[in-house]
Length: 244
Image (cartoon, rainbow, N blue to C red; front, side):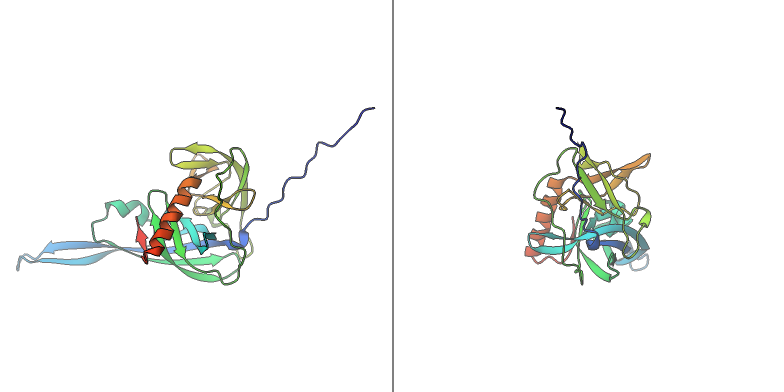
């Protein structure tokens, strides 16, 4: 007797944390501290000079880590054009930022930069969601090689209230400071969270390749947890805001 069985299997249906998503709009002003000697008095006069305001748009999500709830995105989204200039700015320079979150649920939320890690391009924004209770958590375990993951992000700012792209792909390993995922990305997706099949955050969309935008580069999971530990340490020290 020949026994037959179906080859079809039911894939696990994800329940993405799309309601915790928000589009990030940042307005940044850089003020450099300049000192010039007055030709008449020969006294040095110092003042701040504005380099003007610039805007940036990206993605992000509300998240929970060890009981702390805040908003997570990429560092270059929080700092905009100042991200590339920061290390070369004169000592004493100031950065004035305004961060506005347009949530999936239609809420307009004003945030405040709490912590930016320049090395790992990560930013934590102090903000509270007025309605969403199902806040995603940071994964306690590393992503599994060649396992399925998904991102909630707005590449090319493709987003509206009640609509945000959910993009799936595989975790394919690490190279230098980044983890690689085979999911599409484009400007505007930066800061969008990357989740495992258990709907826990393992990384962030931070980069893609200009010639092959079907790859998302992310902070490594271990580095993400380490920078969040640093963020919690800063909060325990009652430091209001820091870029390091």
